[in-house]
Length: 517
Picture 1 (spheres, rainbow, N blue to C red):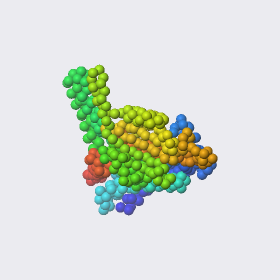
Picture 2 (picture 1 turned 90 degrees about the horizontal axis):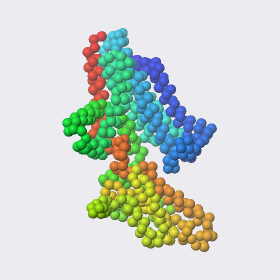
Picture 3 (picture 1 turned 45 degrees about the horizontal axis):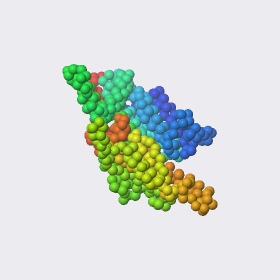
């Protein structure tokens, strides 16, 4: 067994594709050591060049990504680019090409006579070749991921232990493809056939799985039912039945292929779940029906735990920690069932639920009746329209904003109160005039705190349950989990993929035992 592993090792080291892989692996590692993503700028060659993020973003049309942690977004982008795209696609194909010759070369006349004359079972020989390929890719993957992790840590000062799971993802993904490659190689004794068929399977698995996700997404949104109901005037009944049968056959075939083939595209999702379990805490707020989720409260604010279950009454409250307590401002989120509104049009009475625009208009009128000046802004939260009303009460000591968002059967009200805002129009006395510089500083600090509380509304921090499913990828991410129903279950995905590996190795072993050298 040691001799066979040594033989496989020497074949790998002598392989030009392996050398190419080592060179390609060094590129992203060098990138992380030569380019540093600091908090305020990108530093090249340890200070030789420095570019602010605003300058870089201007090259993309002045995109505003709306966060102070721009460096982390850049780092996470390159992590995904190098691991998911660079290594997960191109690198995987090169690894397949680098190891596809393991079995065919073993079965060449002369080599086979030498190996099989020894007291080693053919199953052991087969498994030694399979495990040699796994170890080969594990070495490359570990080198890539650990090297990038150290680069980002040393040069950019960014530590993400969950990123190390990327090496496991690559090995898990390769294990599925390598089993198929071994099976093809044993049955055909051809490295070329093993490479081509394995790469084709790799692409088919991804396409089938993504197609199945899209199909499940459409079913979830009840679009299929609407399409099939159709209009009875379109074509004859027989044509509709024939078309429906053809569609059902196609969809059933897609489902069968999905369950039979390894779930290659699930590898990244499983890693992301493990990664988040290590590096991220649970959401600050999540409703039982899954309609509303807040990943993290506003910066420098703490959640009052006793309000967590009060969403339907007084609301869930975050209070300031930066200035000493609730008196310095707070953020409140509450919801209530949307009232029904009846309107009569052409003698017909129609009933519908209140919209966010109507709720904000009613509140605006209430403020104006108290003599307060308010402004209305049309915004968007998680791709849903949200109306915002901002006002400074007559006392001039606070700045308030209330947002109305209608989703499903509920109206969500998000209110931001800044209790230390010194208005330029109201509430300023002689002492304020004498201390204008200090007052200006206080106002600037207040505005900074206000922006912090507003920032938590963006960047996907607040997710509306079914809005997360407005595209198939995001929807599948939300339903794919450890305790989900069977077809969306991580354990089921892993077990079916492992079953595919054992099946391929079983077929390869069965064929190998029947070859007469």
